[in-house]
Length: 197
Image 1: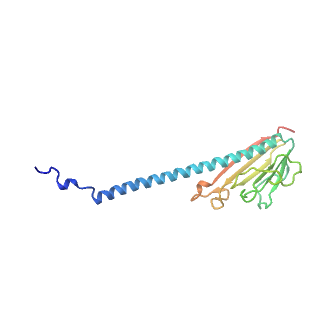
Image 2: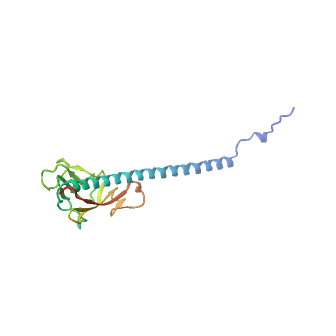
Image 3: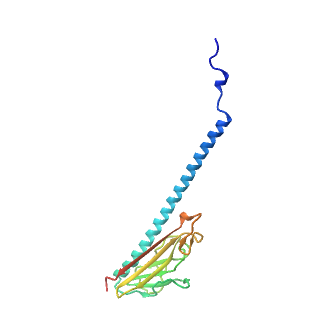
């Protein structure tokens, strides 16, 4: 009796077939890896933006409440776009709240915006060591900080907070490129009316 299976039917894959299968699998793996990296960048960018927006909103709320319920006009130098960024910062007071700010300074190395809510020492610069609270997060800076009094009881607040290293945050704006997922800016403008006199 003759064997029904010949030697030609029992061969495995050829080298060419293995190379094609490996190439297809490598392309699928490469596309999957690029997709995962892209989703990771979007996730970190979203997290950075949300954190920066929350800090900007918190700072604006703090200053707005001080203006609304402080019972007096602002004393001291209201922040404006400085021709020369002050090295030591400037201070203004509203009621019992004292704000000391330093525009475009990264908070991990210096201060950005300090609030002393129980001010009893007049309108002299506040410090974290003296009981003040830093309102900005690490790596954040004030890129725009303007408060103007538009009428007897109305104030306009314009705040922009930036997050990122000096190479990705230039001139208050994020630069496209590597590390862009770790850069964000948030701009908030509002008008506040003083309620207590």
